[in-house]
Image (cartoon, rainbow, N blue to C red; front, side, top):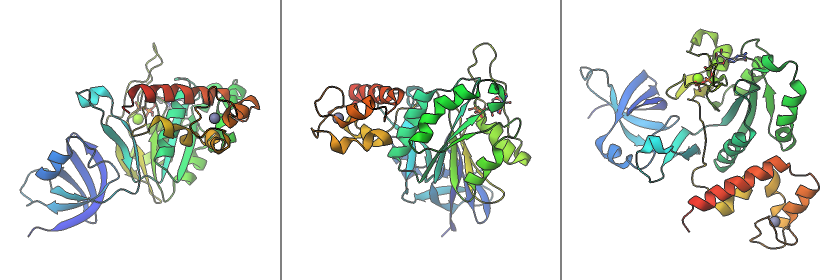
Length: 318
Ligand SMILES: Nc1nc2c(ncn2[C@@H]2O[C@H](COP(=O)(O)OP(=O)(O)OP(=O)(O)O)[C@@H](O)[C@H]2O)c(=O)[nH]1
Ligand SMILES: [Mg+2]
Ligand SMILES: [Zn+2]
């Protein structure tokens, strides 16, 4: 019988999985049976704990096969973009399995922040029930004259309890604070392309020297520089997952009725609505509408909520 090892999936790329084991990193493929099952589920993903069987050394570059996947504690995922699936069936795409923390990275400028996209990321993170969620606003060096405007955009998130860090990978401002938040945890950096996720990682751990690239000047749309997700061990404990930029996110497996639970400042008012099936749009005695009128809920966030619910309702099969 061949030797078995357990380890952590630290990189996934087109059917190959790098598994960090007590014997070092080993490139693996899925055992045939698992491969069949994984055609329509995200069976193995970055951050999964797996059992592998070592292959004889002469078996070229692949060193093992994944024979079992441990049950996930939690998972941050989205609906896979259609381009990645090739069929019209919805499929889960796991951003990372078993994360302790999500760091949502946006740029203060170039590209401009997209709070409505951030709201969708936050829904996915709340659905995943992540222990820690943090918002990181990078490239603060580009807005020294418009700091008030940027603070105004993100203040609403601080008010509802999400920590917001203002940083610059170029000047190093705030990088130590960000580093401190990551120690001993498995964190994922996610956000649009070109916001500086990889640059921040390089600032935290300079010896990594990971590739970054200019944001396209003409469109201000970052081209994807990071092509695959990878979990990078921090020198002083913990891991960071660097992921490719995400243009949009539809939270996976969220039903329209469930959505208000994932907008934390809306959720707290829902039990006080007169009708249990209140949609918070027109019903009498709606506590959410009252909170909105009293500015306890930001109109931009409520707008995000309505738009996202409309989208979920269109796609949901009752
Ligand atoms: N001015 C300024 N530029 C920055 C900062 N951080 C990153 N950049 C620049 O922004 C561009 C994109 O940075 P990346 O680190 O590649 O961005 P990314 O989020 O990893 O992008 P993807 O891998 O495509 O998702 C590069 O030209 C960086 O030099 C910053 O704090 N200030
Ligand atoms: Mg990158
Ligand atoms: Zn209501």
